[in-house]
Length: 145
Image 1 (tube, one colour):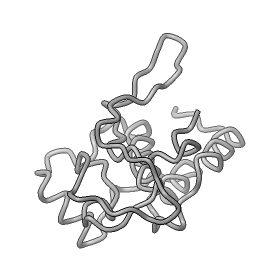
Image 2 (cartoon, helix red, strand yellow):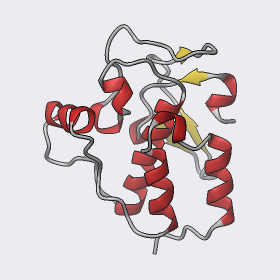
Image 3 (cartoon, one colour):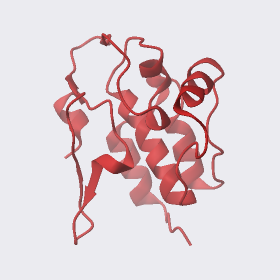
């Protein structure tokens, strides 16, 4: 079940917080930074999350919605496509500045998965829903050969 159906913003979605069992079922863990969402965007009291996976609005401590997790999911998809760690070798404070203030993003792979990643990294209101992401993944052949 998508945590967004329950109106929860996890705020620290990253590969290390995704557990996979022997049946390839993924479970999200570590809800220590999560917040129940209200009808309007929320404002955090401090920056929360891991810089390499954080949405720009979280880094800038701006109001956020559950779409902050969609940005992070895009980073995880990027990891799965490239088999690299995001922003490898860049200090976290440089990642924070680059993503939040310069609009920097990781190099987006070509093809349908790249377009999906790019959509996940759009402005919050333009990011796809969990349901749209699942539909797009099921409608296309996303083999990583």
